[in-house]
Image (tube, rainbow, N blue to C red; front, side, top):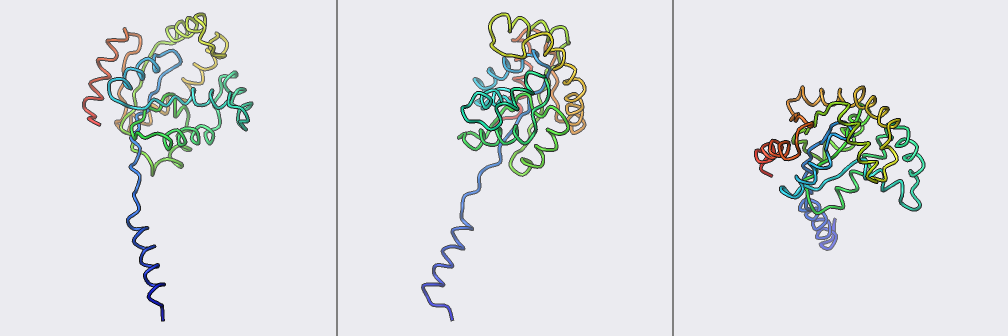
Length: 216
């Protein structure tokens, strides 16, 4: 027969597990478009107006590449310079870590998922932790993307991939690998498409309508 002390301790453990707080699911808006489409510019405005946390997959990877002692640094650096896709496990781990460390539950995930492997890895790791609200798709002509990125590089962006060779590779990768992901979400009626060749203020006026309707 169980003693009173053992019974009480068992009940305490049971109630503590039942009553343990459950973390809210993260609200996520994916932000996709070619290099130079203006994703970062629009994200900065969304952050200021709507209080989202901006998580750039590229920025997280670059920061990890430069972090002293990083086991992924050399591998990330090679992929970035080659204009190819970093393994999804690394990107998902960095995104999840950034979300867990934030006090917010509203995130703009910029530049991800970029291919089917990214999508499959994300859904496997994060489907039970996030709600995808929609996908912002900034559609921009190839020549405009190239011109913007080269101007950014000439102005001292410090990005190793702001050169014509890397840009051509990145745009080819985007067209072959990322466009099918946008089509995947479009089939789920989750894509909000914007002409990114227009002036910044015009684009943001349309973007604001989408977030006003979201009401988070």
